[in-house]
Length: 102
Image 1 (cartoon, rainbow, N blue to C red):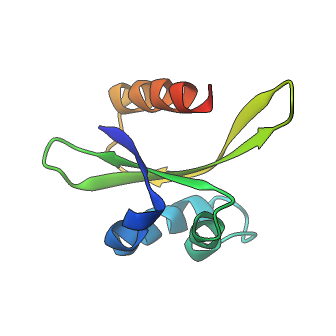
Image 2: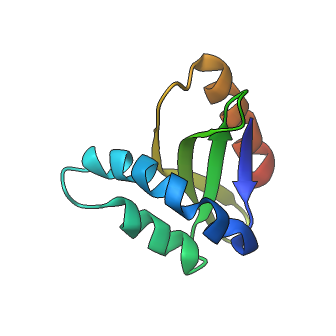
């Protein structure tokens, strides 16, 4: 399952999400750490999404940012980290992100 994390639930998932976002930061060439991505979410400028497996464990974390003007709304995937996410999870994630961005 891939789902958006509302601001009021950030503290509930933060400890499990930070190591996953650190993995995304590792691929940024040192420009970002997991806490940098989390700070963007906590300040309200970005959104946090999690991937949950069949055992109800968080196996993935994604951050997004929405840019909007009067004619267009665009969602960027800023960071994505995790393990054990196969094509099924990624397909579900893209569907959820597209629906949210509209």
